[in-house]
Length: 175
Figure 1 (cartoon, rainbow, N blue to C red):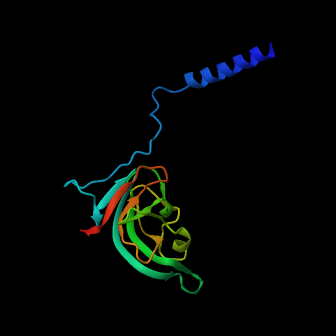
Figure 2 (cartoon, rainbow, N blue to C red):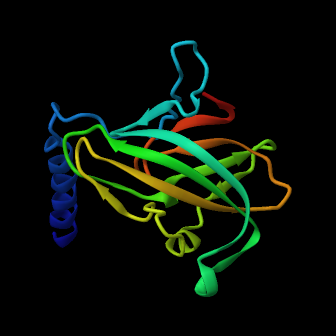
Figure 3 (tube, rainbow, N blue to C red):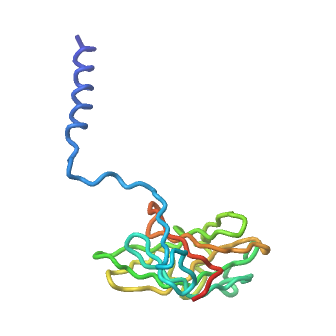
């Protein structure tokens, strides 16, 4: 008898969770790769805006070959710091948090590098660690990557959040 009651409760719980779904709710987000392209059908380059989610990114400057960040109490690069200067604008209708850790740098061989947020904290004006941006506002930030000395970055994958599809900017092309 106890087994029948337990089984019945489990079945009711499963049916209740299935029946309780709102059919008008949007489907769950997928991590589809959203590539931004310009009107000419190519990836945006340095100086051109690219959108992902509620952020519009514009890579403004590239700074390779930095060996140390932050003065006497800063941090040395394992290889070289590659600094990507960018403007991040909130194009949504509520505050959003920009995090440099969500961005990926890609070299000519296809290797993907994560941002070095610990090094970015030592960099004055980095504004890339959990930076709150209100609607319509923009922040000039610097995302720091520690890459091998012989790395040749050619693209950056920019995300408005950890789970967004992202957009890609061609770092070999300048506006």
